[in-house]
Image 1 (tube, rainbow, N blue to C red):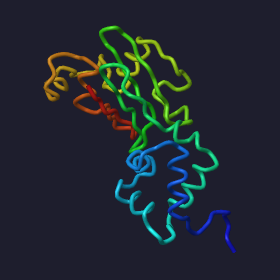
Image 2: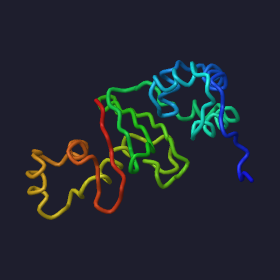
Image 3: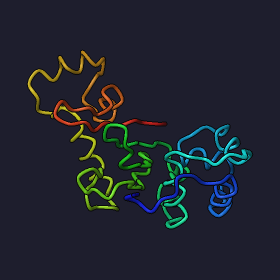
Image 4: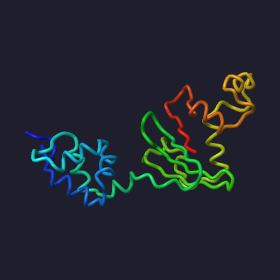
Length: 180
């Protein structure tokens, strides 16, 4: 007896149908379901039934197509993008224009504890600066100059420290990837 109402397999037409419903190319669909473009092409051209985790994923996408839009990472809005991660999970994406002191935040988790700014979806630039400092050793730390020398940094700058350390702290598994 099955415990879940999910088919054992799906057809090439079902895969192609959900991809077209979502208005995605094979390459975009491959990115969404975390497989290669060649795999999607093989699925859609194949005559055999397709099995595996993709069957459940297709069922979910058919029922909740908005998931694709919720997971989509938009084009970068400002010159710098920070990816706030928990292990390998993307939690928050922050687009920043430091010169204009502007930022846009995109959250990809419902867990308030994993979001860069918690419940705050529209932080100020000052709150962004506080967030950066929170991912570094304190400015008042003993022997700060030794740490800065170790990192080959001329002065205390949270963004420069994060670029060197990825904002990794000893007591958690959060980290930051920066794209300029």
